Amino acid sequence: RTKWVLGITRALSVRVIVQGRHETTLDVDREVVGAESGLDLSALVTLIPSPGTSIHLGFGERWSWDPDVDIRTEQRDLFLKASLLIRL
Image (spheres, rainbow, N blue to C red):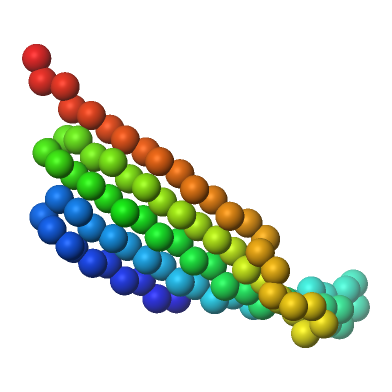
């Protein structure tokens, strides 16, 4: 697993996380039936224009492969989150 955080300006930052994984499937007799490897990637861009106000844009993707199959995309996510501080 590796994580990179880059502060571009005081209000703008980028975070990227890459994580590898390996899964082994066992049967009842605890013999290996299958194995699969994969890679997870997630990225997040954060903008904080003023204290208490923020906008987050994120992306995630999961790839997997096993010895018999090419690389395939299992999951792809995109999200947007915003919070606003209202002062009265």
